[in-house]
Amino acid sequence: MSSSSSLAHSITLPSQPNEPVLISATAGISSSDFRDAIDSSLFRNWLRNLESETGILADGSMTLKQVLIQNWFSQIQSGYFRQGNWSKGIVFARGPAVAVLILLESDGETYAVLTEQVRVPTGKIVLELPAGMLDDDKGDFVGTAVREVEEEIGIKLKKEDMVDLTAFLDPSTGYRIFPSPGGCDEEMSVFLYRGKMEKETIRQLQGKETGLREHGEFIKVRLIPYRELWRKTADAKVLMSIGLYEMAQREGLVSSH
Image 1 (cartoon, rainbow, N blue to C red):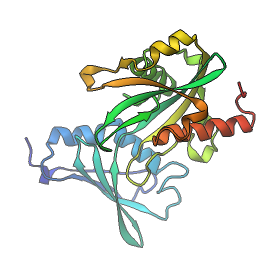
Image 2 (image 1 turned 180 degrees about the horizontal axis):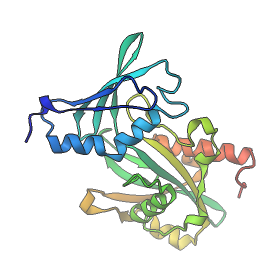
Image 3 (image 1 turned 180 degrees about the vertical axis):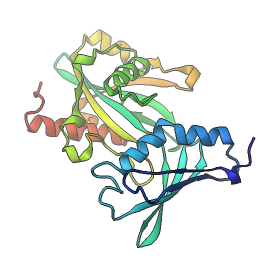
């Protein structure tokens, strides 16, 4: 185990070729964790976002001076930027994610399929959309969405039936949603799936226990009438998906049934 006080690395960004960025680590981080952090797709994606068309470094008014890796297990890092005086931001690096709004029609009622999960940070049990993080940097958002639904709900969806609601956003957004941009780099794609289902199958899904136990997932499936959905949960993913879906319908981008 190396002394993390001596861990340092320098990189040069295309947007500031004459001002190298120092990457260092706080005490307690091993040399292998340090290398894993700076080689990770999460870190590379963050750097790409900084230099994207709408990124912090895009217009040259700010420069990145230093990045401090504080806790790689929790994927936390700090970036020091200069624009006149120094400014600092802490990043909880999670990377790309997906969420799926599943609407099932049965006997004239449309149901939204949610997951009920224990969420330790909130201290609550939360009703939320099926969702998950991309496991790599290949960018297979729709494939990840289909896989997460199968793992969390237990039903198999086809990729070609998925509608990317975030694809309707303005290009300046990068076609992604930032759920908590003040502290986290997580960028999310929201998909829509609509289908029909027999009443008995709806009944069987309600309360079904799913999830990957080996990953600590203990999930129950909950079906909520869509007309009641907006007031049944505080999950931001649900409320974002309703907004995207309703506006996309209003603009004629998706059909009303």
